[in-house]
Image (cartoon, rainbow, N blue to C red; front, side, top):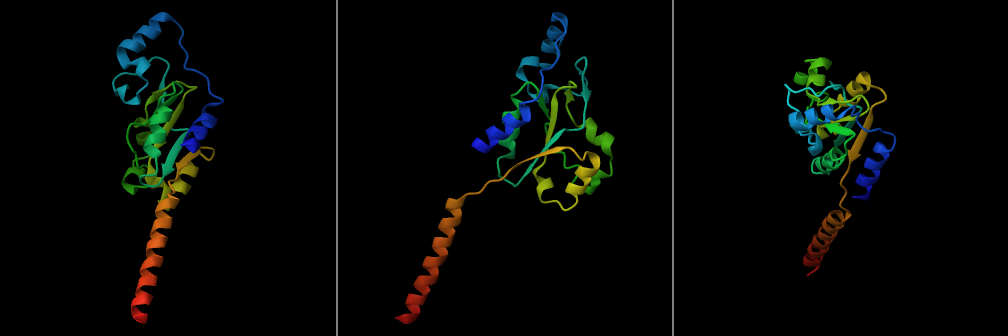
Length: 175
């Protein structure tokens, strides 16, 4: 948990807030897209908040299955300077999506202000042999976050169980 919080802090230390020029703009945002909820899924395809665009992510979250990537994404989405893609896009690891091109990928991203960070999460990139090169070709300075779950207790229990099983089979042979 500390790793997730420190990673989120490091990502956010050099960002600035989204611009709010006047009260009318703020009221428009509140009524159209649920401005204060900061849930990216509230941005519908039809509503484009003034001053925003769909941008290719500056950060991609990768990781292993059940490794905490969703929790990391949800924690980061709370911050007003971060917007997140609502689904796992599988652009870089699935050939059928990759051939659709970078414009297709961009259209799946949420609207964001220029100084907001756009984040996508697809854990499948972690195990895909072609994803690293494809990501690098798109943006060589992109930031990759990973959440890796290691449960040493489970590993120790399994090793202890195997040792006990081997020991009991040796004792049965000696009897």
